[in-house]
Length: 528
Ligand code: HEM
Image (cartoon, rainbow, N blue to C red; front, side):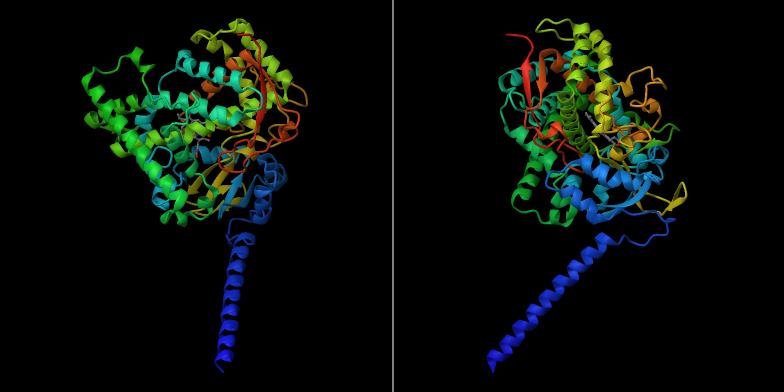
């Protein structure tokens, strides 16, 4: 008898379990397949399964996702509803719609992650900061952070690090792991200009500081936690170690701030000459001290809130989070494009030799660096084709009309930078690498392959646009220009015979887009 009861009980529990699994799976599938009903005038949607398939396909490529899913869906109307990391949101690739998102900042607001999900890694890492605040708090941050960016950087800023990069490539040039080299170079350069710290990346010493910084930067974009943010409430194992590293990084930055604050207090106000050699943190502390004495005001004279010391620390972290990998990945895409296009590589080289000459140790003066502005077309075309930041997201504070559609208050809207900059309406033959699209002065008669649209506003926005445009964009362009100048001057490079990049770049598919497994053969041009 008891055996019969037990068997019945087991059958019932198995059934209950099965039913629960079926219901859960059904709920997930329903969420994936059927977007929530919204009265938006009939914006079409992209099937989430399609997006998921192209995202996690065996050889992933943002180019494939863009060409097979985003562009075909967007081409007719410039706007679709799309599923991304657990949410449905509006995606746009129309320059006029993008203009509205970039310029109407009070309606298209930044998503305040630190208020929305305060326990997730990224929110704990950088709390309230320039990148995620809106309104008066944003203005308060921008007035202090902006003060530290109102400057230029002399060519000498990069000299030591570029010397080390050259040595590293000379030693390991065959099959060089490009991404790793670029990450080391940008970490060292940024460490110096942000806080005067040498992270030792190019010395090939994986010291504690480098490991902590990379862990903090990487942990913020771990896919598992983007889809299931709740997991960050109870971190275990590797994730708990990342939170511990974050604590150490916070402590290191706070200690550096205290030292710099004391140094500033002991010295006179910075002179103009020192300003160009000072690090960003010193300049931020100086501006912060000034606002504590005199207050901060917006363009209409309205008093702004004072930034706290914790927010000063958060902004220092955000420079690493926002600037380090974005620059490293953009440089890696550029190196890949020029490996695939040896004629363009040679064109860039001739330009550099024309300005610097061809002695083995030539290094640009500030004047020569300005004359190398012609290199920017190679950089801009690579950033168009391979936008490192895949999209720019906002949340609506009120309903908006875009063409025939009305998007509801609270909706998330994003400019799909890939689909915008690879939109064949703006850039014919978007898959082709044609730096001349960005050669000034622009001409309307460049032939069918080229386009004059590079000078049409809001079609090239890898740094976003408007008042929320990347605050580091000038520095990022300068870094790419001087690294490119050094590379084409000192080396030639090609893809190994079996490289997948010869036909199509393998890349991650959303967030920050990085090449995957990009190896390049560098050959020195000068004997030592
Ligand atoms: C090639 C390199 C870079 C790319 C492609 C890039 C791209 C971007 C983009 C697209 C945004 C706008 C995000 C949005 O509106 O949602 C942004 C914002 C930002 N970037 Fe960059 N960035 C780069 C380098 C840097 C560097 C070197 C720094 C700092 C040293 C930096 C610091 C920031 C900050 C603080 C913001 C927030 C600005 C604000 O909201 O006012 N970025 N970046």
